[in-house]
Length: 139
Image (cartoon, helix red, strand yellow):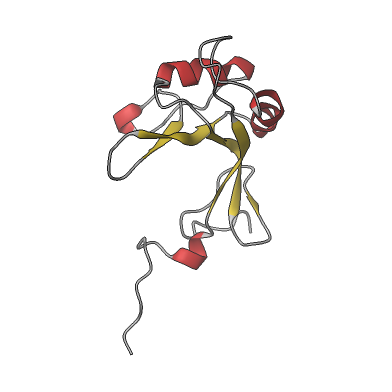
């Protein structure tokens, strides 16, 4: 039989299960140290400089780069971290070497920023189930 069926959430091409059960997203990088004032188009241009960023297939932002910036839940302000998905896992691996430890943006634009870039991980879907947060069972 080919394939493994849907499963909870399912992985995408190139995902790997890590020792702790989380999945590494082989074509997606997790970036820390982005300036709060950095705009989406600047981020897409900067990180797209080494290879094509995957285009979203979701209807509300179809064709836009697959970039997700995390925001503070209380203030709604960017926290300076997020994920960027490339077309190819090899581009994501290159981005780690290319961007980690460097300032964001064109030379001099954000001189005090320093980026930390790693392969993104997401928790094992089987451990957390679909319903979000925990909550104790009755007893």
